[in-house]
Amino acid sequence: MTSTSQGPESGARAAHPDHLGHVIFITAAAAMGGFLFGYDSSVINGAVEAIRSRYDIGSGTLAQVIAIALIGCAIGAATAGRIADRIGRIRCMQIASVLFTISAVGSALPFALWDLAIWRVIGGFAIGMASVIGPAYIAEVSPPAYRGRLGSFQQAAIVIGIAISQLVNYGILQIADGDQRGKIGGLEAWQWMLGVMVVPAVLYGLLSFAIPESPRFLISVGKKERARQILSEVEGEGVDLDARVTEIETAMHREHKSTFKDLLGSRMGFLPIVWVGIGLSVFQQLVGINVAFYYSATLWQSVGIDPTDSFFYSFTTSIINIIGTVIAMVLVDRVGRRPLALVGSCGMAVALAFEAWAFSADLVGGKLPNTQGVVALVAAHVFVLFFALSWGVIVWVFLGEMFPNRIRAAALGVAASAQWIANWAITASFPSLADWNLSGTYIIYACFATLSIPFVLKFVKETKGKALEEMG
Image 1 (tube, rainbow, N blue to C red):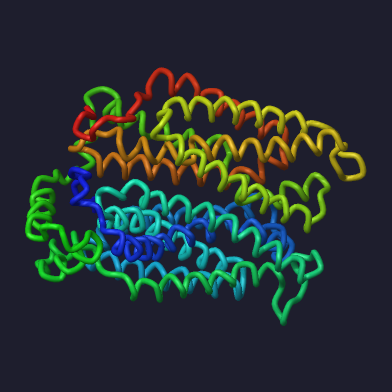
Image 2 (image 1 turned 135 degrees about the vertical axis):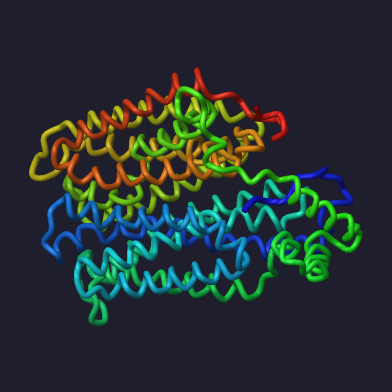
């Protein structure tokens, strides 16, 4: 599933002002999938220690329950495109909404650890679907002149979803007097944290009934008249609708349906450019960013910060994530992708090194000494800031631009799969690594951040200002 041809961004092709509000509504509704992506990915942060306590499990088992959702993510991402091409983008959103809702209810009311894991996989499948459907749909309904800005709604929605999940967790913990297992209306606080996602999940489903199907999908199934109506709604009355339909049809016929075989080279398995894409995806995860979103509350509690404050720091980290993402969106087309990646790598390496130093101190009365505690908190926020303003955004930009047209779809799929696998590896290993040596764990992450610098310098080419057809 791919988006329509970019085409010239002439004034005639831009949405009229009276249509732009409608387009923004459609885009925001579709981006609710991104919001749920971020929300469901990080809401588990508030329940980690409560799950450990309730089911009396060790770090290894706990890590598998937290990370198992990523298996669902990989499956959902791998299958969403084909599902959407068969039944439509809107139906795919509605399926994801139902899965998000089922996952939220099931996770809030588990009978045992095994079924909590199943509900997490179901939620992961929905995340994977949302990660593919949202950007594709937005690209297909956006007027060419606004496609870049409207496309950024998805990433903005993800980081807002992360922040709201931490704010909700913090609010619920306050109601439960700082106890993750405190009772609220017959359920423990952590159950409410996981269950509240029902609200945005249902809203996502309702909004999907208020937005039109993608014109590209409608044309692919022969519903050209309905496609013309939608193109008129989103691009304005002055557009030559017959020409637009013909343009989309021509682009679809021109597209090469890339396969796994297209990615293979003669000596190294994959073509060199595919390995670069895999490297970008893997480095993005191996710096340990998802530790900040899945385990930060647990991390701060492990060094003596009380649960309420630890939840508050998880929220402030999420706000820093939003700020960094906005900075990246502003700068990515001005300064380029490579400079942002290099600045981000340097900043992350330094911040992670400071975190490693802070966590190397002996606990005094179950807490880090004051100096190390302050350094750890500041460095954690600086790390997230540098990640968000660089690798958090530019990796996706690179992956969308760097591959030749003939292999783009298949190469993106392989790179995205590598990213989910690396995400799983970090998420599943952190509790055990932290039990082994928390400082040593952050040294490992700092080393990966450092290694990403020569990787970018040697292998990654700038894609700023280049047409997709120039990628070879």
